[in-house]
Each structure stands twice: as structure tokens, then as C-alpha cells.
Figure 1 (cartoon, one colour):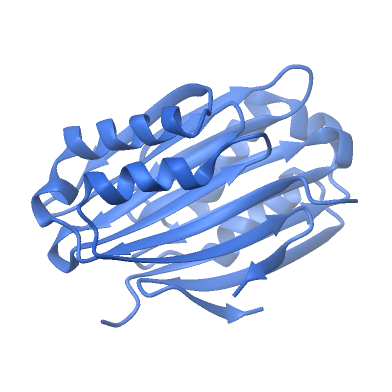
Figure 2: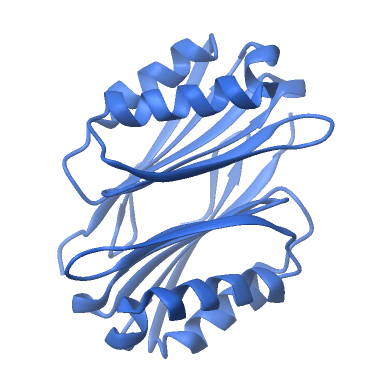
Length: 119
Length: 119
């Protein structure tokens, strides 16, 4: 069985805390990221935590794009999982800009079967 | 900065194809898995693909639990991300049983900062 999907884990540091704690801004950025990547948005669900942070996911026809933010650390953890032709780099660039991140770390994995591509 | 969350990637093989292609069964199994793990369910969103497969996520107060299924391969890719006290093993056991999986592969990562714990 060859790989069924590509899973990109991205972490943004040095982000604007206000952007990360704003449910509307995080939701908008995630939807823009999905669109920029060429993904087909099926539905989405985002939630604001008290006192800090936003969690949520965009279900795309190609799989999902999820985020969890820690405004108090200027930190956001993003997951982009796709089993179709999606430009993840473009999507992640939208998020990096939206959060004014100064740093970014990525880990790419194949799913089905699970394999770390770039540790 | 110490780790902010634990991210467990799990893949189930040899699954019952009918279970993986049934939107209601996958949704129910995922909600049961979240409950069994002790997570607090915030909302969920699942989608059935034509002709095969189900994708979706449960947003939990501790982060998320996502799945993508490929019934034609008897395969399901699961993501369990938590920044709180959640028993992921119990949750994943529910899914393994629900799908009658014969095989399972896991990869555990810390998030914030990103680090592979068990490659």
C-alpha cells in the first residue's frame, strides 16, 4: 500500500497574542488558508477557550486543517492533513502572515502507512 | 517552554470496511472514544465522501480527535491531540474495537515545541 495521505504538522512561534485569542480572526485565517491551498471546504468548527486560546478544525474534502492556539505563549499548533492535491505551503503562509509569526517549525509525515518524512 | 500538548497519531489496519464507510457508526465511535478518554466534547463535524470514506473531527476542550477512513483499504488514520489530562489509550481502544481493526501503528509527538517521542 502506498501512502494515502500527507500530514504536515506546523508550529508558529512569536505570534501576535491578540490575533491568536480572537475567535473571529483565527476562524477567518483558517478558512483563508484552506481556500489559498486550493482545498474544498466542507464545514468548520471553532471554539474559544476561557481565558485564552482558540481551537478548531476545517473539514476539507481532502481531509482536515486544525489549529490550537496559546496566545499566552504566542504559539499556534497547526495540522494539515490531505489526501488530495492541496498546496499546503500556500495555506500555511496565510496563517503565518495572519498571526505575524516570527518562527515556524514543520514536520511532514506520510499517513497510510505512517512514516516521518522530515524529522 | 515545556511541551504544551501531546499529539498521538494512530493508524488502524484490517478494519471492517462497512464500519469505516458508515457515517453514523464512525461518528458514534469517535464520540464514544472521546467520552471514554475523559475528554470534554465541545462540538463535532463528520462528513461522508462519495463513493467511500468518512472524515471528521471532534473538538474537545483539551484539543481534538480527528479521523479519516479508507474503507477500500480497511484503513483509518486517527489523530488525538490533547493539552489536558486525557486517557488517549482508552479512546483509541474504543476505535480499534468499533472498527474491528487487526493492526495498529502509533506515533507520539510533543507539540510546542514539536518533537517525535516514539518514532
